Length: 266
Ligand SMILES: [Zn+2]
Image 1: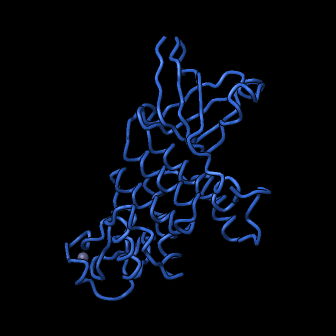
Image 2: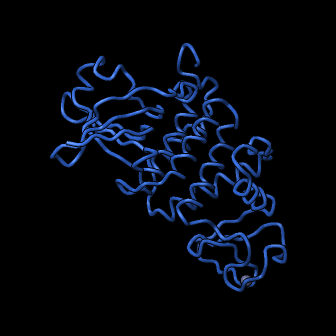
Image 3: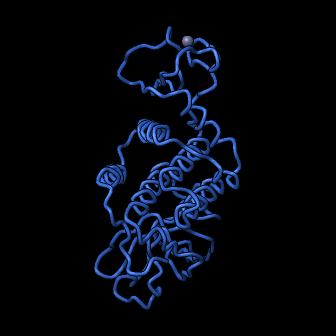
């Protein structure tokens, strides 16, 4: 039996029989890790109620003979109550968590993904960015880290540079993963229209260090265009339509007046 410990964020939690939970963490040391928390359902005392989604934890696991390691200890570094008490923020964090879960293989170490996910959760939790801008930030960084970054530099087909592509409305080919100029645009039903302003903002957000992101200002239209683009492009490339995204879009559409679901926020 060997132990390992790591900083970890809980991204998935499912029941396993009457007593146990199967948990999936994004960890700093070992990437995506799934493990069994024995008796976590039966006894709240066993893990002191810390096994909640998006909690930033320190965990210790024991690897036995079985397929999955066992969770031995878990202590809270940050509970992100600002997210858990707000249904819209919870919906955003749930969507990001599902992207991470779908993209990463078990045991695939990726400190960059951990850092960006942790940063985006803290932006969301502490209202450093609005949920919409935090989501644009997370998704753009996710695309860079996962190597499916959209080509905004030039026409993906003929190489005509971004500045020389005419018009304010630009066509983005989902399958080819890049902008296409008017001559090269083929109506395939797989393209999205993006304004020049939205493309510039998306480039800006990827180039700036996270510490300077709070300076960005999105107009309502650019924000909406950017979200719509990213929430189409990423699922297209992952080949999945996350359930969490359908939930997020439903919540966002309804825009409930009262999104706080805890008596005490934070
Ligand atoms: Zn072209």
